[in-house]
Length: 110
Length: 510
Image (cartoon, rainbow over all chains, first blue to last red; front, side, top):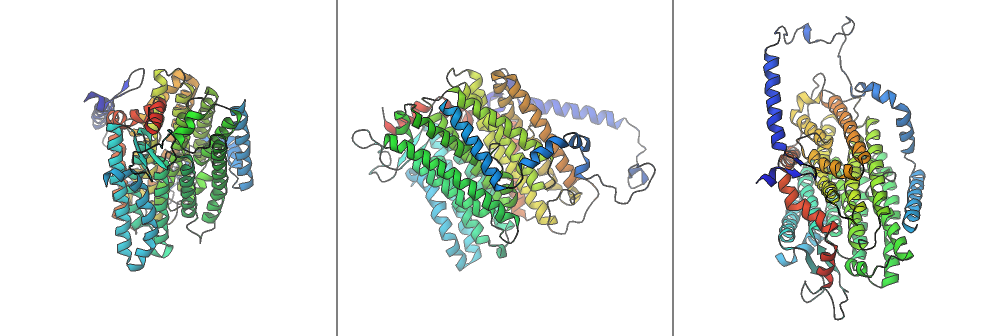
């Protein structure tokens, strides 16, 4: 039975059900702490609006591209290079295939 | 009839696929029922074969013999077409049947009649037959034939939406690369046939001497199958293909990629297992690392939800290559951690099929409801489609390898196995998973969170049921992974890593 709920990883084991029990314990603790917090939040009032320098904004929405904007911006040179490789040009794709084939042939025959 | 289950699992979808357009002429409902019957039959046949193989060992089925077990003629020479299903082949069959059972019912509701639904179902059925053939065959030329069947059916499905500009272009690029890949595979088979006069995989494996021709054939096999498995940097066709095919059919395309990986394992472990050195293993490991990293970064750069999921799917191929690559590197010494990594790589094939399959179904639902997959235009769908949002979240977390979901169960085996080979391998794999978590959290936030939007179209219930089945599978595989690892994954890994002699003796006797 124990074999069904855990897997040996070579240096130990992974038992998801133990993890779930621990996770539930942490969640219960989190709910207990949360329940002891201040109760001034009121649904449907201005408290729900995001604070953007005191300005009221119509349809305030954080889009997908806003998330990790800094990370994407920092990686922009790398991403642009990778995007350049994915040019959509079939000649380039075939070229990559030839390069890899040549490398594989050299490695296998060496 | 049960004695013929392996060939029926291939023949029924092959012949049934061709019969589908004829039945569609009678009535659309008869066609739909027919397609469901085909898929159900394949599921039952594959299940029967799997139970037989996992409990009683390798199943050899010979076509054209007086008895299906008559493998060799006098002189010990195998001349007939042969299906050889070991634990790895059975495992691949289970993945294929599972995804077909999910994809086809969803496709019946997802595909509009006016867009050529009959054609798509026919192509899907042929793709299923090709994949099953690749998984079960024990003959190199037949493997090539089924490889071509899958290529033709897959390319037709990718370019299915001929009225769009991008789908035919994606299909053309994929077709060109698949054609080159198929020809290289055929050339490799021709080299071996010219040298040994045989096409039976087990028989050629015994005869291989490691000559220059053998090695050249190996290089051609590697080039062909790595490209078809979408390993970087020859993965370029995959995001276009996955992104442009009807989303529910992308599930079968994912399995099509996986069966190419299976073909690669079969060539490396069974065909060349007797003469292989560690160079090829390190090559597979290197391409695995490159695949996971490049695809994860490219996923970060996407604004189309379908292409983002497609790059996520490609990155998972890298984990499979890494896990099994470590097994290849350590095959001569056979330390325990090599088998652990192998188990992780093979287990990840099943987990990947479920998670990526669920993500593609979520993409299909979003596209059906909003008519777009552009993350810049999407948002707030979680209010109107809470069940789709939940399914997307579960699949995203599983793909990123967050415990206790199934992706973590296979990834931890890959991490630990590869760590023992080199800590750098495990570090790259873990960091890539973190990047994937960021990418999919962004996709979830972009598509499902935010202010409420109107949702006027409902997601058809068969698609929701298919999603639910995959989500439950993700949870079960995540919570009780040990059962599946012991019952299916370990025998499959051992069939490759330790079972070459068993495979050869099952075919050739002695």
